[in-house]
Each structure stands twice: as C-alpha cells, then as structure tokens.
Image (cartoon, rainbow, N blue to C red; front, top):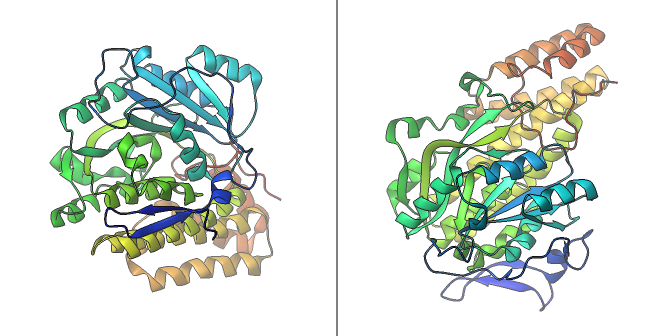
Length: 413
C-alpha cells in the first residue's frame, strides 16, 4: 500500500481502512466515469434539512446497471412513480455497458447516465455517489423496482427524524413478469417476521445494547434497493469502506451505518419489489464465491472496529454466505453434468458444512427437492438433468436471487 492511499479515520484519529488510488480507479474502468447527459450543479449538500423550496432535489437515486439491459428502464420508471415530483428527484444511472437507444430513453426520463466498466459493485456505487446532488441517497438495482409512494415515504421519515441516518424497508418478491411471488415462498430471513409484531423500529444504533437483539431479527444487511442513507453517512470517515466491497455492498453499507453511530430505522412496510428468476447455477456459483469473500472481509472489519457483540452477527452472515456458496457449487456440478463422483463430492462438502454448523439447517423445501434430484441423477443421469431443467423455472422450487447476465433456465450439458 503506497503513501498515496486514502485513509478513513475515526474522530480520535484511529485508522479504519485503506482505499488505494489504484483500487478506486479499478482494473477495467476508465480514469473517470464517462458523463453522457450532464446537468449543472452536481455538487450535493452535506447537511441541512431534507425538504427544500424546489430549487434542489430532496433525494438522489443511484441505479446500478451491471450487465443486464432488460429491466433498467422499468426500474427508472418506478422511481418516477414513487411519490415525488420530478424536480424533487436526482436520478443517476451507472452502467457497465453501452446501449445508445436505451440511454436516450433514460435521458428522456430525466436520468443522468454514466459509464463505469468495473465489475466491483461497491466500487461502482462508490464512484457514483459524488455525482449525486441531494442530502439523501437511495439505491436501486437495475432489476428491482420501487413501490408507488416509496420515496415520498422515505423522505418524510428522514424529515421527521433528524437523528436517523440509515433506513431500510422490507421487500416484496416478484418474478420476471413483475408478478408477486407468494409470501409462503420467501426465505425465512426475508420475512422479517419480527416487524409484523413490532411495526417500524427507529432510534436503533450500535450504542444501544437492545438494538443488537432487534436488528439481528430484521435482516438490515439485505438488499441495497431497500436502503437509503443521509449523504453524511458516505461522506463521513467510514464511507470509503464501501469502495472495497466488490460484492455484497448491502452488508458493507450496513456496517458503515453501525460504525458511524447513526440512528437506524427499520420499516415494516414492503416498499421494494425484489425480482427473482431462474439462475444459471454455474454463474451463480461464481457469484456466491465472490459474495463469500466480500462478506468475510466485512466481518473482519467488524471484528476490528465494531464493539461487541456486533461482530458476531457479521460472522453469522459469513456462515450463511458459505452455505450458499457450497450449495451453488453442488448445483453447478449437477447442472454441468460432471462425473457422478464429482457431483457427489460437492454434495458431501455441503453436507459436511451442515454437520459442522447445525444452526444453518433451517427447513428449506428446495434443499430436500434437490437432494432427491441428486439421488435421481446418481442412478439415472439423463432423468436427473431433465428434472433439474424443469424445476429451475418453477418459483415453488427456486428462490435464488438472479445476479448474473443470464435470465433463462440453465443450459445443461
């Protein structure tokens, strides 16, 4: 690490992390993101009330378009339908691909479009944040959408509670056609069942011991599209930690909020549409491995800088990420039609993990189903592959988040 590296520090001068200039540039990115539709006055306010007289936007939305052009226009349209007037909105789209016709449509919708070719999601978001203009910043993945009135609701929350710096609402699962997925099919943590009993929770922070018990049941680290922050959160000393989250930036942003000591608001309303689809398991396995690496780094940062007992919750996230990585690797081997001994070896690694971490064995019907597919594959490979192909398109079996360029069912060899 060179002397030119940037250092994040606490108020007492302690170092909390390095972000090198080389890393900020990224291995495949241009020297600076390329501005396509400039708008004057890109410098945002660092403090002050959220509400304005209309001369400045009240909230910026960073829409991250990675490698998928399919849903980005619908995502931006959902921002415009989310309860605020267009002049109250500042929409920044950061894209990892070029599409002139699509960019004209986005510009007509009022979005400023930038190109950033780095595959690190956290770094892409970090470079987009200085382009925002409002005192609040929300995030939206290109295949998610906001519910109508979401942003109006979020702005009012921040207006009414000046101590709040980090906000998260619950999600509503939808399929590729934007149709709701039944609640019964949600993963246990995605239900956030505590909020059904308590309603919204506010004034939570790392300094309050009771907050730890509440937040660990609310899934606060999940899904950037359901998060919003004050600008001061990322301009503060811990903000640069987002740049080193190549994957799983939602977990890192939550850690930044905790380290910053800001107030946290957990909303009980489902205001973000979170899209699910059939994964390509080979690509999914690669992503799961990347997520595991990023979440592990976040846990180490929490171990070093967050007070007890907060680091323990991040190590639980590492356990969950390892479980997903092992499971995805097994399905990838099954999908690719690898020799049966290799498929069985991958499944045994997953089973060994469960035996070492019995708390990770919460009931999941899809796991039992795929175990049955494995048994079929080991006896009749062609039939096992046929069942997997069919099952990968069924929401009742598959609940895996799509985060790759592929939107169709897996192509089995």
